Image (cartoon, rainbow, N blue to C red; front, side, top):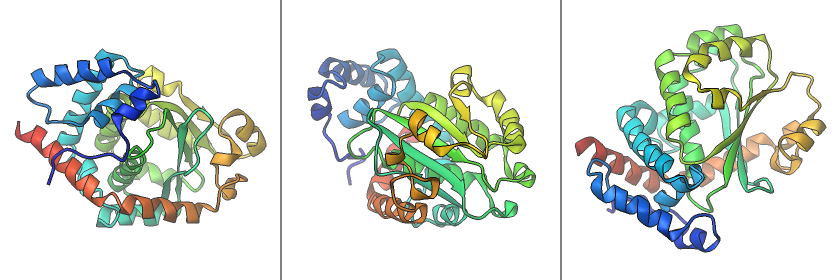
Length: 280
């Protein structure tokens, strides 16, 4: 078994489209040849990091190093990511974590997280983080997006959910999002924002850089969704539950999970790649 994850796109196709350059890939490849800690990577992985960093070579190098370092040091969040693993299956009984099949006109992928089960003691943060990153990275497997818009709907989140948030996993979550995520985060929209969300943000703010904090856009419970579609995320990229043109959220969640089920081998190979970093 190869220890390099294989994606369903070709680096040369993205180079041909002008999204990055052959010289950028070669420069990162040359740098990697001198970095004995980082295991072998594919040209497609290099391209993903370049796109996530706007083709800034130094930022790309930092992101690659952070990607391996954080994943290697956080197995509770980045191993056993198969959709049928008990942690991942459990997380999907508690929440919808979905990347929608339709992208924006700018080729941004759109994801959403919202509680299915609002019982606070059923919420466990580690499986939720694991499932979120597995879903986001799974949708980079083919046709890489130009960016990510993520929507957090806090409907059903109560004051007792605060007791389920652990600072350790939260710190790792924000570290990975800001330093290692192999897709460029463009916007974070928070729907049904209320005083509970203010308390959550106050807890999270110490882990957030100014750039990320300024990406957060809150929308109150009485938000006019037509305005949201016009100004934020088009209706063509949103489920019918929110007045969008896609199918129902339950159906989209099932479709997303069916897609991720096919990536079992991909996740396993990536996990072995990370283990090589630990063993170096």
